Length: 384
Figure: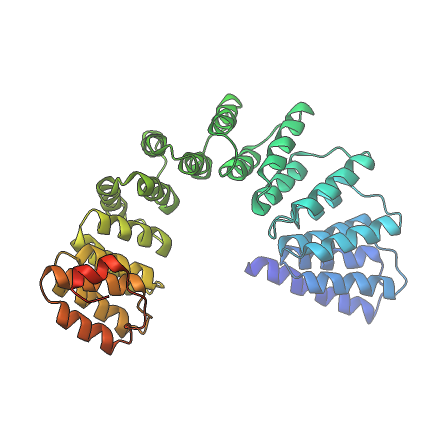
């Protein structure tokens, strides 16, 4: 923010002024290091740490903690751990902030093994991990896909009477969403309520994600209803879970209905969600919605792949002219048509007895080299 940047500039200016007058000490440097950390200027924070040692001053735990924090908030986990090792080498007494900041640095890249190592060092140093340390370690497991470790950490902190907060619970729920049994996720959700924590959209989306993973589509729909009943506004992730739950159950008409609700709520869907529901429209033979989605994605400047255009062709297949128009739109944006594109066009045109036009069109687009399956060839009237 502007205030933090101003604080950093003023602190650095004062430090420079002291070099030209008074003899600087470590107390003089610490505000500048802390200001750099607050602005996420990890290089400057590390540079100031080097400057401290260069003028033969001894960095304090405050100095080191600020540098680790600066590295942590920018995801520079290697630099953060390097500073932590330097503290240990210099026999500076590490605090819970030192360890917690180092563990937090491991979150962004999902370095859960390194986070666990620091957590073990924390215990060996007889520094009791707090909720910040546990939450950061669990979050690193979430990012790194180590859901079993995340679940075990949660059990450990509860056993050690460290009270989880909503950040902790959301992290472990998200970590367990794709892997843990549904019952385990439901127990975690019940624990959130038992602790009188107020579930937010992230809490309920994580639980919904677990239902998608285990193909419990009824539970996915129920969770969306619960969201609305609790006064929580569903977001694009909530609806994306619904769309994905519809896919293996061929409940595309339901998905299209939910899409209408989502758009009426003016929720901005991402490209993945819209591509998924576009296929839903295709299988539900709702060509109007499919072409509308395609136009919406292009109008919003989203990346539209051949797969999405293919879904529009499938939706338009009953009308060969619309299918050909969708293929033309694909080619106009210089995407490479696929075997699906070719097969849909051939099949659609063959049903309308327009296979000669289709063959000519596909030949002009250079698709004749794609291997034609026997069923499509028979439908199009093309000899093997």
